[in-house]
Image (cartoon, rainbow, N blue to C red; front, side, top):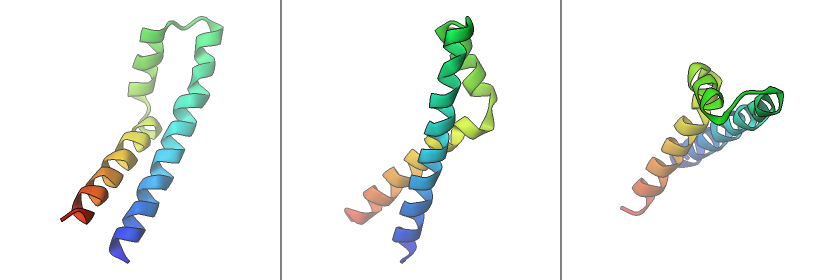
Length: 66
């Protein structure tokens, strides 16, 4: 049950983070270049949710193999 809960949390965090990263792609259409886009993403905490979720899911998959 613990692994299922963490898997769902990791999936939800990944979806939320990727939603923000993709929605911020609109900045490229108003004149930002790719390096400014990456700097903008690094400044916003909601974009870190994608990386945190992926790390949680990798840890859960690794622990299931043991």
